[in-house]
Image (cartoon, rainbow, N blue to C red; front, side, top):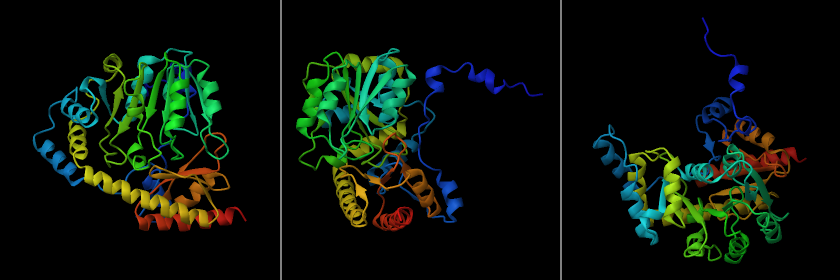
Amino acid sequence: MNHSLAPAASAALIRKEVAGLPRYDPGADPDVVAALSGTHRVIKLSNNESPFAASPAVAEAVRQGLAEGVSRYPDPTGRRLTDAIGKSLGVPAGRLVLGNGSENILELLCQAVLDPGDLVVTQAPGFSLHEIFPRVMGAQVEKVPVTAGFAFDAEAWREALAAGPKLVFLANPCNPTGAVLSSGQLEQVIAATPPSALLVLDEAYGEFARPDPEYPDGLEALRGRDRPWMVLRTFSKAYGLAGVRVGYGIASDSALVQALDRVRTPYNVNQPAQDAAIAALGDGAHLANTVRRTAAEIARVTDRLRRAGLRVVPSSANFLFIDTGCRSDRVAQELHRAGIIVKAWREPGYENHIRASLSTPEDNDVFVRCLTEICAKDNQ
């Protein structure tokens, strides 16, 4: 006998804010794409992962940790990791919070800060969780668009911030475009943000941008400011630890960290992730090499795509935002048939764009060839 509830009965329990949310799109399943394309070599460019291995020190740290056993809970405070991060940044460990990826901290911030009806300001095009998590809490989200040339629109930001948001999410570099705000532009946002609002700078891709003299360090821009703020960073991208999920936030004060501690799960960062992050943080040479190799491929692939007639936003991250000239979902489907996964962008106004993180030079050459052939055929 089937004792399960009918779907309608379950649906009636769901909060209206949740029922209307879009699902987060992680990109196509590699196994599905492999079956569709008939290839075992799927090129996955949808999640901004590093194609380069993590520091060799990471594998050894994780191996040693696993040898010591996994039957006990991890350190709930992540003391060794927060001490290491704090020492590297000159920040007290009490102003650091760890998360199961920096996305987890975005969620905790919304849970701790937002009431139904509160206003959140973020950017467009933008990272979908900057909109989804606030909407879960019943907040209203206003998205500030870039200019037609994908430039920062200072006047639009001033107008949006004048409306009195409670929370501001600003990614620098921007996901999905890879564009960066200059020091002057970031200063304009900081100055225009009401002192009562929590300003959150999401620097998930900051390591890729730091060699650029135009890129401002958000922590240095906010350090000492008498206002609530948080800078988010992660080990998932440039450090190559996407599989173990560990990010962190630097807060303006310890009270903000304590508030997040009240809403987070007690053991939200597992011990192998903590061990891996400590090891990765200690290998600056490996990080620098990854950043250098990534920048070289970004420049090379951007040049090839532009020579093929495609519009590509200049990127200081490890991905490209590409105007295909036709519906991005159709382009993505054609790429699936070639064994390549990208992110088709569906945000209103950008439906002709795809976001593609870069891989090895060999994979990137296959991607460029397939994409240019597909776009040439579709735009005839």
